[in-house]
Length: 151
Length: 404
Image 1 (tube, each protein chain N blue to C red):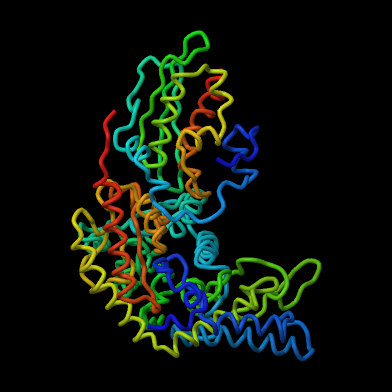
Image 2 (image 1 turned 45 degrees about the vertical axis):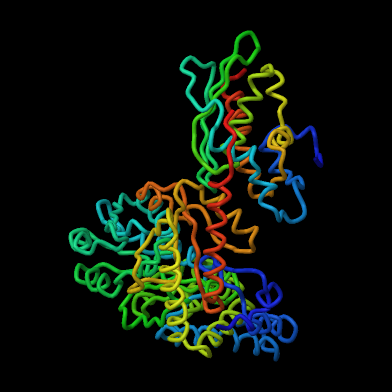
């Protein structure tokens, strides 16, 4: 996968700087709606509430009406549980499913360093500029949540 | 019907453009008229006495006249703005100045954000109250409720003529009578209707009527604010500066005559000339023919779309009092995913809430897919849309999902 600025870890900066995401036309729907994505969309992982979470955060994508609430539970710097609730398009929901899976394998410090390209890698597909907002909603929710919880 | 007149559509034969409700494509005559201005007589208007400035001034003023005739108004009643949104904002500020605490502004539940948000701001400042005429289960205005809502407290009624989501055409003439009976003014948001229907402001008896150039084959950046002469004469200008004054001293200023007193600064000259060319183009085709063509297409599309299992049309399903805008949902498939697959088939539709979040919330929808037709669309376009929808369903359903 083509990589642009690896230091652009904040979703806000990512869109502010308008890094080139994908050029060229996507013609095959298989590229976007491949089985892996559809699977995460139809049978999302970690789609539940965590009642005693360390923090949770809700964010929207007003353009499409996607919404995600992310729940994170940490113990001594480790992410011991991660989950989400919400609704939206296949891309936004599959991203949240994949991200929460990934979060459970890493530390909070590592989570702070996640950037847009990590999400695109998790999805394993090319994302057009417009749909990047859908794909990156879960990451934006995570980053805002961490900021708000002052972790 | 006329796609050959539209260079973009001629160049992209595989494009199925079903988003004219957002903006229409532009015929060659409009592009040429604007080019001609920039290439041959670009100059400021109402200022120079040299030849090309005269030419530009004549064209700019003629644009007002052409637009005026198009909707049955007079030149003095046509103010050019940046678009429908700006027209509504101007009116909200100008009419809002006279509102007092407890005065009521009547809107409807199917309004576009541009006919809600400016009034909310005015209500906050003045203490006026917003009232919404509800919609019925068949996506029409509830007129018996309207009768109860429009009262002596009502000062302004501002209503969309044709809904940009439902396609519903509202009985604005009847609403105008109701408004006038209680001494209120009526504003008609005609952004979706002017491109499709023959409109006569005198027949509708609307006090103000607003629309945009770019949805009716004209350029972006220009819109129209029609107002009855006797009302405009009594109103203060929306903006102040050059071009709208009669005399300026260091202390005071007086205003020039209608409609120029409402057009401060150098106006959008090329856009006005483009809009004039667009109106002349539509007239050459004939508004009756355009209305018939898009109405036939709508009827055809309503039949084809409602035959698709799990597709729900969000709007009236009969063509009477209904425009060429069809919004729908495809069971639980998110509108953005539908739009994405359709895009890959070369079909351009709008997805989302179409600037009507309150309406979508009311209908408990987080978005819809909207296809809108215009004079260049064909039944073949509708067939391609239907095939695209069926393929979308296949991608999201028929695939074997391996459970983890």
